[in-house]
Length: 252
Length: 141
Image (cartoon, rainbow over all chains, first blue to last red; front, top):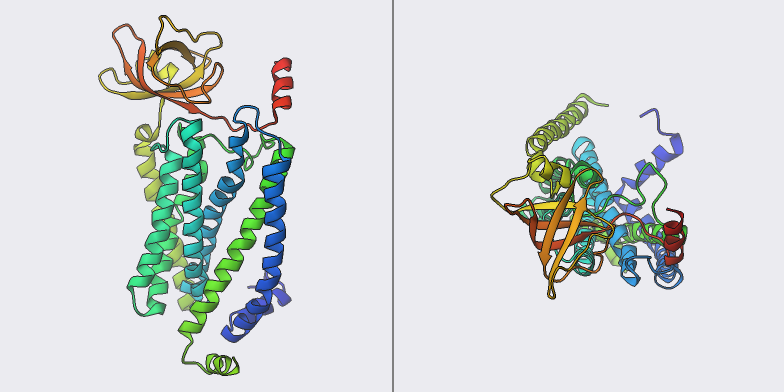
């Protein structure tokens, strides 16, 4: 690929080597954890203490600081999973397969949190826990896609074959992502339209917006940390018969 | 890129495009059923079903909320800023229900063209602001 600058290409090439990946991520995770901790404390303090109450919803609106970042992440992680799965399918890179499957459970977690927090908010605000409108239904389908990916991977013993099957399922499910995002614009839904992710100016006051953005970045860091930890475990299990894992175990 | 990889790339591209097209057509043909509610204009124009339950969405008209007798019965007008429908409901209204607020009601049209709701849900809008900003915005309007 001629578009990618040389050092970046070199970095990815090195990262595709299992021992290098294991070593590098092992040193990276503590740094990421500190950044995550800082961001999540700042974001929660900003959201729960500094931000003013909403003019209509009062303090109940503060669930936004968990609900919205989780919902964004549920879509983001799915796209990462599908792209990593696609790279695994085309170039047969083992680490891409591992990144794809390690993303699935983290993404499923985010989707679940988005659904549950939305439901808790919906009861007092809308007057119902759940409605079958286009936004809620498509997000529920996303949860089932994640669970399908996890289940399919577990059902096939040969993990390389499993990864290929999972990648195809993930790629087919990508269709759902724009549907979730645009559902509130394409159809009449009970769920409100986008507040931040639209072409126009965000319709949220700046004092309420900044903690939301900080939380969104914090959740991204959390995803990377959780995904890398799963990926490292998965990698060692898959490579248990190789020389570098034996050396690793002996040195411990 | 090697030939085999290129082939796999094209195959994956074809799968994604094919599935997207299939889903697009499916959603287009089911468009009506995916609408969570009808607008008041659609109801006035007779597009909503007469014989079964459906959902009606719109804004509560300012100053239209009335309680004709003592008790739970509430009557108000719903509008999409074009056509207006009268709604009757008896029960507890959600927190966010107020005049000028969007709501979705589930119910049936009676013979007089009044929408008798069995359930009323508040539809929140996408605006978030502190109370002071909300107040000053109201004064400007």
